[in-house]
Image (cartoon, rainbow, N blue to C red; front, side, top):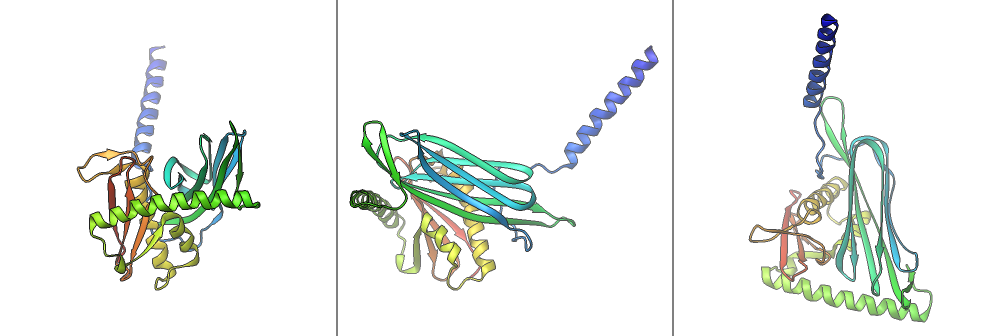
Length: 287
């Protein structure tokens, strides 16, 4: 009997050591987005962001993406803005899969111009130790208007004169707030706008699909990947202020992307919920 227990004990110890050795040898995925060269033979078969009104007074925000193969790491990070300010974030990452789906229901309390933007990402480990990445962008927008107490209507594109009036009103209110915020930051940091092309993040994402003048496809992909790497670390996970403290990005304005005309760098300008202007810089190395 003692011999049996000794044998069982040895087997148990060997199993434990095997697990420890396996865990040490296996690299751990981190909750981060890191740009690697774009994989030449891998792409997203689907990448979408959807917002819709449900239950009369809630919106459903859904993010879905599928890669055409399994990836070492799959990750999606999304922002949801209402009337120009961040109200929610969605982020998830998993290993050894190709598909990710996330969704969230959010209560509606006012008339809202909603804009959702998502960065879809994959990290691929190939034989020989090479690491590549795949990336895609998707976005959606929705207008939500109170029709009666506790009851709202929604539309992506206005279909009536009344809806068109609401759209214009929400667009104007949002644009005025953002322009005031961005201009305050531009003055605060002494930014010379003549040296930059300015895009709100949602417009920059749309422009990325069309292509940037003077950028090769490879350099444009690198710029977008580096931008979202920085946004994830310095905006999605929280904003680091000038004094070194960190605050949540909720309530902050849509980032304004300032792309240097000499193609050497870009700036990201936003304002925290309490009104502090924040500026981030990303070197491009393409000029």
